[in-house]
Length: 81
Image (cartoon, rainbow, N blue to C red; front, side, top):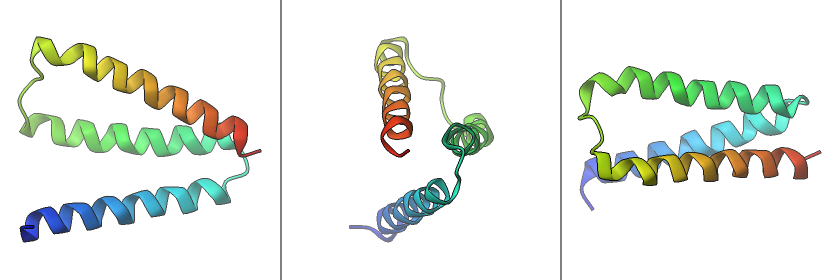
């Protein structure tokens, strides 16, 4: 594994652990997930100018992934009360 891949995996692990820790401390789950998702949107928008626009064939997969994540967040909010 290259150092870049190792760094990306470690960064992903730290990011995931951080947002989980934040999510567990926030009592209003909807606000917490909105803040966490909003942070992801901001990072995505900041990085968007540096990547190519997705091909048309990728859009069904991108939309499916977004729908799965929305369902995942809804289930997490309902189970973590």
